[in-house]
Image (cartoon, rainbow, N blue to C red; front, side, top):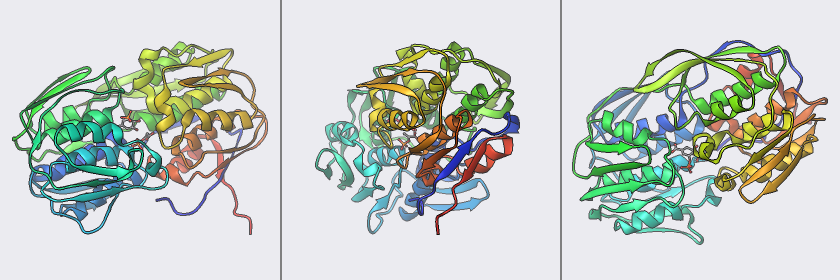
Length: 440
Ligand SMILES: O=C(O)C1=C[C@@H](OP(=O)(O)O)[C@@H](O)[C@H](O)C1
Ligand SMILES: C=C(OP(=O)(O)O)C(=O)O
């Protein structure tokens, strides 16, 4: 969805200092639009992430007949009720967002109209069989391109049945797709996970008044209830904060404060991993926002050591591995990542693309099927390509802060999918980072 190719130049900047606020949580913003749209009455979403992924989800619900008004970083959603969506003419474009497409597949599986979900080139390569399979077991009729790839054609259906389902991979998107389809199903659905994942769908369904029982790694709910309009105050996204936690850890002299960051325990695995590496990060002013734990995070430069990342942390830091790879390449000693094969089916193959990117900057990294072995040391500089993956672009920008020479990072426009304003915010705290001039 991002317009044009954009390259960045990164190099040693100043120590990172100051106090910043990062944008709203992407997972919460997607879900807030979805549940508010299906609720009865108007909901106000504050702190909504103005990223391309979440804007694509909002635009889809507008096409499905939901009134959504933007007021700065707020959205007023005029909910149409569980059965109030209307068919849209033409495909619904999820852009770059796996979350958008997988959750919508569940939500649209029980509608009395057909829909088609499409995405950009990256999303069109991502596996959807993991949601199609359980939704078919519930009675949904969904066609995909060969190999379970998008686009998804979801046929009209008003007779879904509940299922008892164990997700084959730890995936909040798969769990959420089944839970959202269950709103339209007869009977009680039970979802179990091999490892607990983020529980925003469960928490938010409860906040919107839907009877649901859940705990770490499981959720149970029945169909046939109603969602009541509810205001959602979206906390700042831990995954966006992560780039600054790593950058301030590795840049000497840094002392940075991040305000009111969402601290859902299923999201903060990177904090635990960085602390094992020796990072100096303290939590202050712990509180609550929109039903989620939040805290200010103060991060000061520290010498990082390589670690074997505990596999139990992997789902809690699944989006933070590109940043962790950058930290590991600059740490002392060896870091081993395992049990993280899911990284290969994100916006890019994040193991391969980070390994190639850091190697181009002088790092020593060996890929394994489900992770990597990273030898920490010095980075020289050079040219690395993010392959249009937002988290890789931002992680390579961190690496650039500590490289001996200049780092050119290719294809960064997709940063706008999750973190609009990253470049200016990073510059404001001392990053050496700027857009590369177009060659004329
Ligand atoms: O449910 C969510 O909001 C998300 C779940 C994770 O994906 P998986 O469910 O594929 O692990 C994560 O990588 C993604 O950025 C957001
Ligand atoms: C994997 C991500 O998101 P999604 O699955 O929604 O594309 C991400 O933001 O890192």
